Length: 75
Image (cartoon, rainbow, N blue to C red; front, side, top):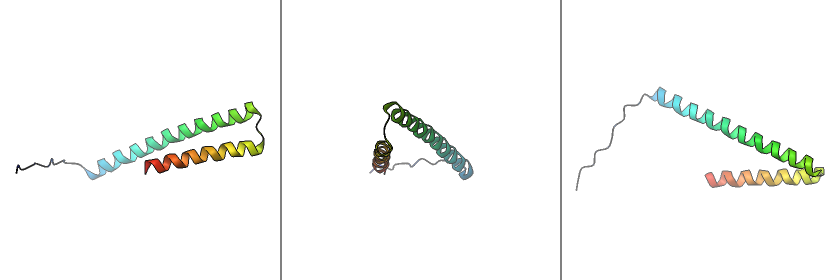
């Protein structure tokens, strides 16, 4: 059997934590922009199609279900 060397990394914990925090913040910003854009698209569709309140609510419910399914796929 061969000896396999495990690479050793000299990482500063504070620096790593800062990098992770920045990545999370950037991810949240990206997600917020995407959701905001989708909401604008839904509002425009509701307005252009002249949907009733019940129809608009159903459209929003379907969109929420899509987000829920996507979140489940990521876990």
